[in-house]
Amino acid sequence: MTATLPKLLKLVGTARDGALLRFSIGSEYLKTGDPSNAAAQLREAVTRDPDYSAAWKLLGRALAEAGRAEEALEAYARGIVVATARGDQQAAKEMTVYARRLRRARDGPDAS
Image (cartoon, rainbow, N blue to C red; front, side, top):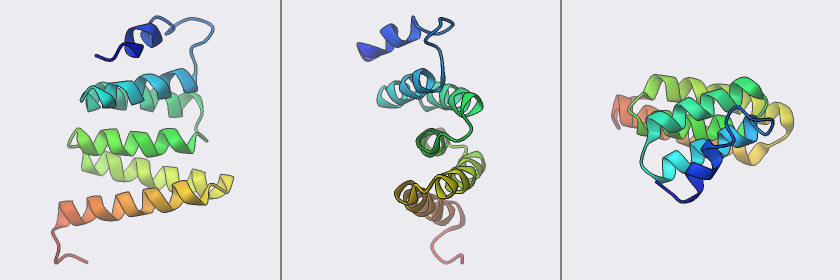
């Protein structure tokens, strides 16, 4: 557990609890190698702010690391829509690449 994580967890349920806090907690869980808890926090982040493209991107990563490829692809797809709508082309491009890699890993190198 990182030194930051306990401090962030203390803020859950307070007035400071929101999409950014949940994103930060999810990020910290990923750093500790806990993608399942990361995904739960990141899903809460996008529930609180469905237009948070960075949270969609990290949610996709957490789900992929947790072995939940289909859910990860869904998160990336939603994130690409959000990022494109917000003009965040870099995030959209990154999620497109991550989704393509995930599909290749799932389907094998010969699948199209």
